Length: 138
Image (cartoon, rainbow, N blue to C red; front, side):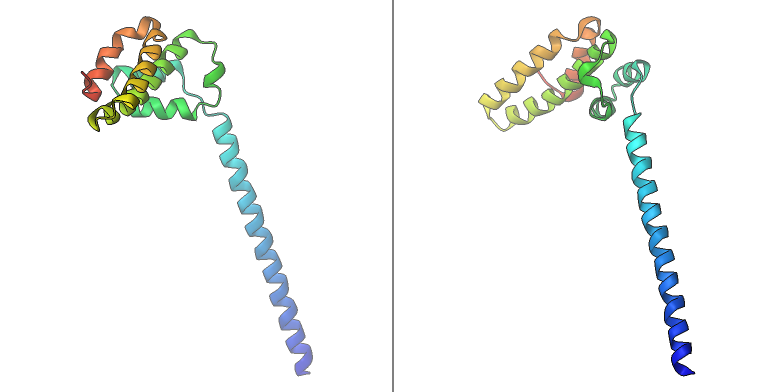
């Protein structure tokens, strides 16, 4: 009699473990699908990017640049100009760091990258001075 009770108890415990394991696996898979679908569709609108620039919210602009999955093949000219400002800001951070640490070779390298991005800013070129002021670059 005791053997049957123990066997039934082990079977119930086994079934519960299997059910809980299945729920855990399904929950993990649902979370992964949710993350993938959210990241695959995450794109910043041009209006959002222009607002970040106008508000001098360059960190958010740079994050949007890296979050946007298709920014390299962008066909929207205004958006490409926004991305040029984002990259200019990123290179400006690098330039300032190397300039302050007296690494003139690396500073010159990033200054050249900044100049290339400036040329790509198009009609948004007027914001270059704002980025320079924000970064306190001479």
